[in-house]
Length: 115
Length: 397
Image (cartoon, rainbow over all chains, first blue to last red; front, side, top):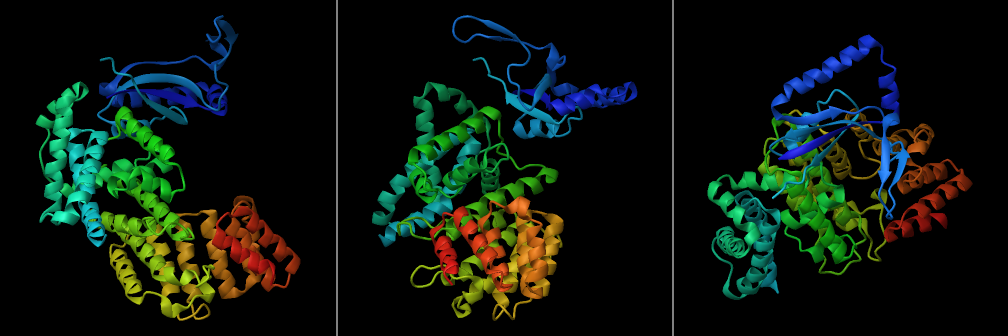
């Protein structure tokens, strides 16, 4: 089955990430790099996203598109990146997600399969 | 009517097994369940009249498999399922199938209420109407809950397989928590429901027994089953003839079911032999201390406090702290117990039994006004009629 992992964190996580020293940042990326290397065979396309201050939202409700600065949902969690994952089932995907070193939350979404 | 009840019993024993086997063979929860439910209707019509077949599970397997194949052939969408059927093994390890089914129904990716509904439906063979009656919900709500849960199982890829050794512990805890919730829903209700209402507590105990059989080396299911048996053993004495709730201290202990208590203690000892203590084993051990005591005063409160300390080491929850404080009250008087309780106010302010216990301790200390305030607060926080009646009696003493 194909899933997308949405790597999320709270604004506090984001602030802590921004405050990392270059050395800490290097270590953090090394950990994340190891996770990607370990699961390489199961991973598809993915990207780290730039921070929420760079987001722009287009709302298409009510005929007239409205463009606004910022995230669509000013929620507790911010999506910081994503990757496609090929796993046999949810348990296999969960096992991978539980070892994610790069943040506080991983949302697992099965993708719609085109028939 | 008796024949019908007997048929229903036999059916229940066989249904989970057949459902589980069908899911593995056809890879489709909905199809399996529908076919088993259809077969149940047929069984309840014909079995009381013609007699229960010699091998009910085999009868059901034949009937349900035929129905499933018929449906698949008729339905375009199910064509690919037939390929799945051709490639999957036919029949091996039925016991494991049921374990897979229970673990899938109680998967942590499902909400607790979905876990409960699915387990009752697929494992215990409840109809949607029976689940609705048991949880005082509308049939439409439960039906929708089941549809959503089954859709999630299919869409999110929740598997029907035994988790790895590492995962099994957590997954088993999830299963046991679901079963205990079902048990408590039956046990704590005032039993004012219609007599036809299936007894949730008995059903949950049946499910716990099933899990014990499926995982004979795991001590926690034995602990849960023992705990349920101990509650059931005291069940009859929990209400007086007028339907009033009777507290442990005032219960007629001669009415407790001794053989059932002995069974529970036997289970606790067998579980302890595995040397892997867990929350349910400890809860059962505490309940056993009560069950073995000739009266509230001749209860081994030292042992109970020690067991609560062990439980706190595994599950440091506010409710366990509350129960430890109540045991300490019996052992040591109300002063220090009340101090422990007051430290829990922030966590348990919305829990009626916290205020009820606090009220009793204040009452014993002669602080009547505070005691009344606490009992009134407890009363505000519960809707259970039997508990309300007891709290009201306390307000007028």
